Image (cartoon, rainbow, N blue to C red; front, side):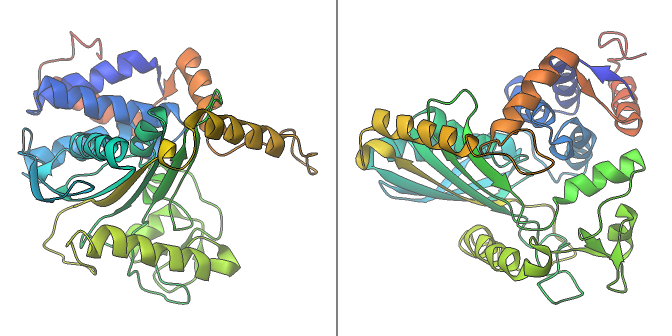
Length: 350
């Protein structure tokens, strides 16, 4: 498996996207978010997705240059139709609008539908946190294929339905939680398949409802379990609420339409901390809270306690120095696309 420096990998992704018909601006945004996911240690949402995005462009499932339509709007709310544009581009713009409204009015929220994959959900609430706002986002794939069973069930009825909340602070690493409400994000299973690896018991079941450690079973009639193991009713309940916010409130609906295409529906909100208490005081207290958490004595088998978001930051610092390891199957797919667009020599991918 080759190890590639992040800036080079980002350039490769952007050039391939441009070859597929994306504008330079769209390609820069998509590649930035994708390689950013690799740097955070979330390879499932990283460069492995670029061939999939290009395939969806070819099939008309992603529309480069799609219009961005505001269907309904108030001083604090926005309803956005992405018209099947790149999800990264649509959601980044939607969060920017929501942030500006929150700065003016204290709180703001938006719903987005008809956009492609938005990638790592944390990227958008973190935009808000950097501006002194609390950011929240949930996502659901609408009526596209489902992979997660309700607690106690055997057939999938839900998506992985992620949720993220990000807080402004004075910490070196951002304070945030970004998690699927399933036992594992579906993309991590795709990475395991690509790398020929097994997965921990408790993540998936096979087509007969039996526990499995073979990630290939998901594509053969299996399903992902809800977050929580024996207490999976908690992850299941949270997933249901995310689907209502991101699927039903957005107008995407629920269930599975086999003729549909991947359609990330999103709910996002921003809260201006200054509307509640002085921002500087809040940021300092969040910082002290994180330090208080880290000061607890460690349990057996642990050398350090991390606050939410810290591990991703540390991973990024390491990978910026060492480079990003790309599984052979993904690198081969990228090289094939470079050949197709006559970019092999200029990208040095021979």
